[in-house]
Amino acid sequence: MGTQTNAPLPEGLEIGGYRIVRKISSGGFSIVYLAEDAAGEKFAIKEYLPSSLVKRKSGELVPEIAPASEVTFRNGLRCFFEEGRALARIFHPNVVRVVNFFRANETVYMVMAWERGRSLQETVLRHRARQAGAILPERHVLRVFNQVMSGLREVHANRLLHLDLKPANIYLRMDGTPLLLDFGAARRALDAEPQKLFPMYTPGFAAPELYRRTQQLGPWTDAYGLGASMFGCMAGQPPQPADQRELEDKVPAAIDAMAGAYSRALLDIVTWCLKLDSLERPQSVFALQRALRCIEVPDAKAQRPGAVGRWFDTLTGRSGSRRRDDEGLTLPG
Image (cartoon, rainbow, N blue to C red; front, side, top):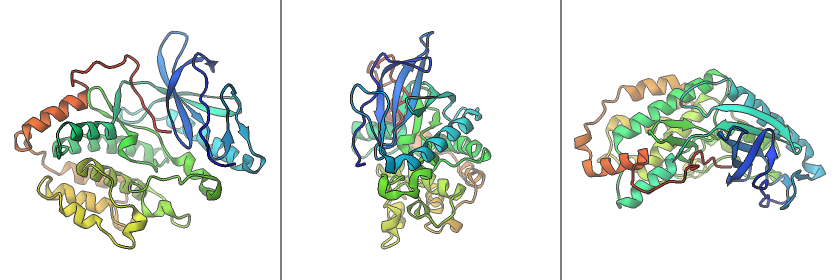
């Protein structure tokens, strides 16, 4: 079955004790909805619906699964369900809170707490659009990623890997605190039959071992994603994809080019995370976070106070523009 765009569930549909308000986002793996329970409390519901394996037309609820894709679909569904159960055991302020999951329409739904804010990617892009060449101040890089690492340590402690770390999957609440979301472990489980699937990684943010099936994945894989995410926030674009780096590596020069804007200590940490050899990267997030915490936080006045002020306004949602009441957890599919 070729890839296509699957129709979302209709607005107003009652499912699993929730009412679908609207679609938030969709991708090759899932569709995410804003929903409400009977008391009117808002939630984000993620529907497992890999578009390369199933097809759902407008007006339908149950997707059509091609016989040749049945085994792959069921394997991914099982991993998605198990991942939801594992995430539901994690109570950490920097990890998305899974509050429920249920089966319906021959698939699985993951119910997550809803919070207002926007992705780190959107925040950085808005900041740079407001002022050409504006950089993300180092003190904010340190603050955001220190908290991201705290959440990721808890994830790893529960024997899970994220496997899709990137600014789009780091969500900033209205107070600027980050939240890890959109884990990629279930998608990785589907990668056994690549001819039926989209690539299960994001070029630029994916470690070299995610391009192959023969190398072991571990905390070092997520360390690469952390380094690539920091690079993306600092440079305004992702680093060179790992498969291209193995032919001609342009990342070291790109990191050195940021020496005037960021401390050598921070650039060295990004370099450490982005090593192509997994054995040369941080082997645990604890070691990485310890190194990050050793960096002296720069004086805010030393880093373009006007830009910093504008960045803080954007970060906290205080830009002056009015927002929809239900604007919040925009999860990539």
